[in-house]
Amino acid sequence: MRTFEAASQAVEVNGETVLAIVSGLPFGPAQALRVLAAHGIRDPQPGQWFRQQAWLDAFREIAATLGPNTLYAIGRKIPDQARFPAPITSLHRALAAIDEAYRLNHRGGPIGAYRFEADGPGRALLVCDNPYPSDFDRGIITAMAERHRPAGADVRVTLDPARPTRKQGGDSCTFVVTWEA
Image (cartoon, rainbow, N blue to C red; front, side, top):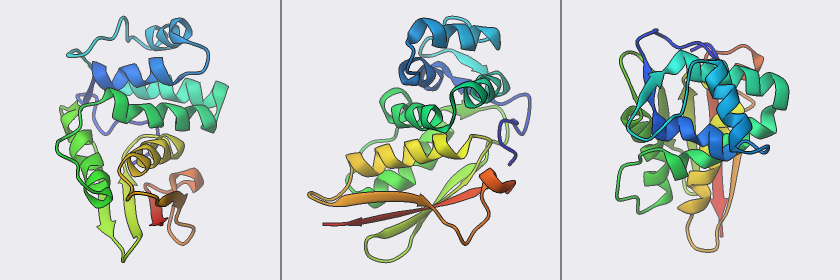
């Protein structure tokens, strides 16, 4: 999927997820709410639904003005804000749950996916085929991996350099998640 472009104008994202921008922007909630309002999202609350394209337009503005580190910070807030399935009892389950959560927090048409693949001991892949920026996805994956890693394990999340990335015009990104105690 193309970054910042909803697959359908009918796709919506819930208020819980939208609020990740409010909590993830470094300059505070008032400015975050102004950015959202400029794109038609006013006073987001849990339980409300908003056009995904409006949210993606806010992301595009944030990417252009604040850069990839801010997108990453917003992604790290998603597990705090969005609905996730329970229970999550392992790192593999946490990474697979990202796609399930994505489906709980979006509706109305094709949204893409986060495809989890176990890739040996201490290694997994996540293929992100969705309209969100790569640094945002990396933030989500990193937050989930850190929260659910085995005790004492160090976790690393990197783009797979052997596969296409949205940063280089691809339709998806593949992240490699590794961990070891």
